[in-house]
Structure formats: structure tokens, C-alpha cells
Amino acid sequence: MTANDAIKSIKVMLGVAQAGETTKTIDVQLAEATLTDGTRLEVDGDFEVGAQAFVITSEGERVEAPEGKHETTDGMVFTMDRVGVITAIEEVEDGSAESVDEVATSVTLSNDMVNTLVSALDSLSSKIETIEEGLKATNHAFEAFSNEPAGKKITNNLNEVKQSETDFQNARFDKILQFRKETTKHNPYKK
Image 1 (cartoon, rainbow, N blue to C red):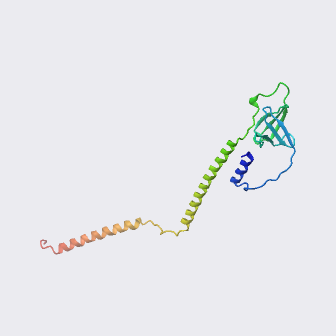
Image 2: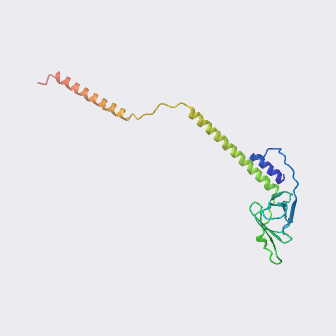
Image 3: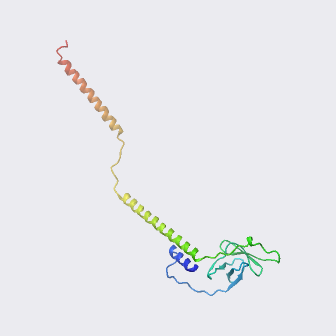
């Protein structure tokens, strides 16, 4: 699988492109340079500030040039931003070449790296689908719950309970009084 095939697969998975989508071919003039480490560098048009630079991988694919300073074999230094756009062009004078640590190296994507990326995206895609299914189920349950009729209104009946207890105690007290009166009337020992 080439890097372009992997990118097309990723675009299809993310919904940015359709499977089987064809691309148009446009003829573009390219400027090319070789970096001191042997990496090929290309831009559409001429090497100038603001041009998008690409590194040519070992598989022949074009990827954005990495951020940093890149020295060519003919003594030019191109400074790239994080998306591979040339921000400065300098000429290196004899004897003042930058050290290898200061010059960014090119990045190549191997098939293993691309396959690992595609596998990780597949895993994320399935997790996202699972989350979406859970969200749909939750929304469905919520809609079903919200469409059910309201239950009986809950009221605070604490005062009613207290009144009922007071009435019960008063009735009990009245019965005790009634019983006492009756027993006192019919008591033969009472004078």
C-alpha cells in the first residue's frame, strides 16, 4: 500500500472522500533540489518564500516537508514552517555550513507505519461507532421517558397526618372520659 492509497483510505473512513473517487491530473512545473542527506525536495513552480515544499519518499510519494532548516547540496538553506511552507531562503557561504543537528532530516513513511496508522484509525472508527450507538440508545430511552404521561402529583401531607394523630388521641381521651362517667354512675360502692 502506498502513502497515497493510505491517505485515500483514511479520507474514505473519515467521510471526506467517496470510495472509488477519481482525481483530476493537472500538469504543474516543478522545481527540485537535493538535500545534503540525499533527500529530494520539490515545490510546485519555483523555490520562493510562500511555496509549499514536499519531500519525495523512498516509495516516490510526496509528503509535506518537515518544519526546520534544510540545506541543499548546491548551498541553499530553506526554512520551513510546520506545514512545509517555505518561510525563508538563504545561501550558505563556504565554511559556514550548519551542523547536522540544525538541519531537519526528512520523514519517510514505511508501509508498516501506514498500516499501523490505518489500523489505529479503524480502531478509533469502531469506538466512535459504539459511542454513537450508545448515544442513540440513550436519546431513544430519554424520548420514550419524556413522552410518558406524568404520574400522580406528590403533595406534602404532613399536616394531614399530624391532624389525624391529634384527632385519634382526642377520640381516645373522649372514650376514656365516657367510660369513667359510666362506671361512676353504676358504682354501688360510691356514696
